[in-house]
Amino acid sequence: MDKNMTKGSPLLLLLTFSLPLFLGNLFQQIYSMVDTIVVGHFVGVDALAALGAIGGFSFMVVGFAQGLGCGFSVLVSQCYGAGDWNRMRRAYAMSIVASIAVGIVVSLLFFAFSMPLLELVRTPSNIIVMANDYISIIYIGLLASIFYNLFSSILRAVGDSRSPLLFLLISSVLNVVLDLFFVLVIPLACAGVAIATVLSQAISAVISYFYIVRKFPLFRFQKGDFRLDFNLIRILLKIGLPGAIQFSVCALGVIIVQIAINDFGSDIVAAYSIGTKIETIMSQMFSALGMAISTFAGQNLGAGQYDRIKKGFAACFFLIVIWSVISYILSFFITEPLAYLFIDSSTSSQDVIDNAILYVNVVIKFFIPLGMIFLFRTGCQGLGSGAIPMVSSITELVARALAAFTLPIWFGYLGVCYASPVAWVAAALILPFCYLVQMRGIRKKLGRARI
Image 1 (cartoon, rainbow, N blue to C red):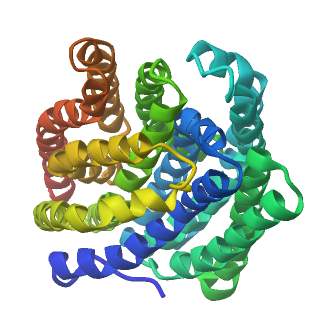
Image 2: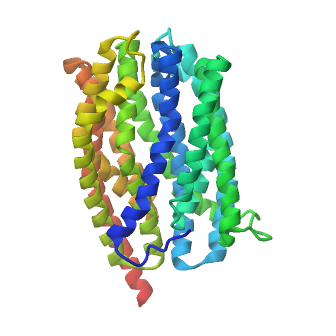
Image 3: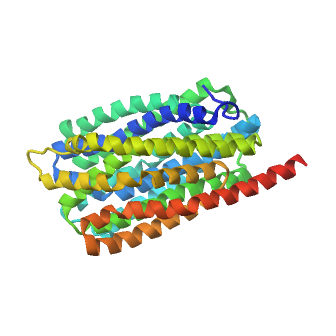
């Protein structure tokens, strides 16, 4: 069911909209989390380290798909808020066309340079083949991820945050079954869990598409909708590509940190992999709130409600602070049990667990700056800016790179743990000013429109 976010309490709307997204994000994390658990228990620590070694590249692909889908849906959200149904449907059609074109190019490009990239980041020799097996299949299946994220973003653009959760539940269960099948029945190791991930995402994308066709008459294509509209495609790419690239830029920062981690050996790579998985799980509420504020901002911009946009951002920041406090408290109780899920403790070093816990204990203290990044980056994108997310991503990249190559010199592995928090703080410091500048421009634009 669609939801009009131009009326009602911003705080209540954002909370009720983001909760299903939060649950959906958790289940989406099951894709990679189950992959890690299965290989950690049934293949070994080296296989777990292999998945950890390509974490940055995997984040780059998944983030690219998420950013592209979220960016393309911004125009749909604005058209929905303005009640322009014909343009909304055309934007949806051209989003599909642009997704196919961009997806094929990016997929082939990454696949061609898969092994050279792993060698470039100094992936340990004992795990590089398994790492390449996994990430090559993820690259090949990029279109599945792009279309799942596109269709989910389209649903969220019209206020439906519950249906994507249902689709994720189905595909997550399927992913678990396929993981076990391709590792235990057909022993394909890391390649098997990659195949399971791609198949699960593809099925979820197909279900999402047919659900949109069935439940949302406004999105049923009419004659001429797929006639190429290069101006509309240009607008979509202007918003969508910066969003996709900014995720990739952030992933580049993660890869830079991975280079520093790789020099510590496969046990530290495994520990860092576990730690980042736990961090990702606990930060999913920020991602949900970011998607919520993007939809809220887009619809209210389309409706010309400037003051309501400001109230939405303030309400979202309040929710971020609350979740940061909750996460910090939860970390004392769930970090160690979660860490033990990923490996067979009877055959693995306790140092792997201890170093994973150390990472979480460091980053959890910096969740408010991380939440601010999601708030302002996706919120400003929802208001139509591609530049602001890009500027913040570049800032984050530079800060993470500087921290990753300097802090370990003095503090070793602990220094690597602080690389991400340093990047979050740097990006969080500039984003509020960017938001204020954008809002000033929107206020002037809306004021001229009323004259």
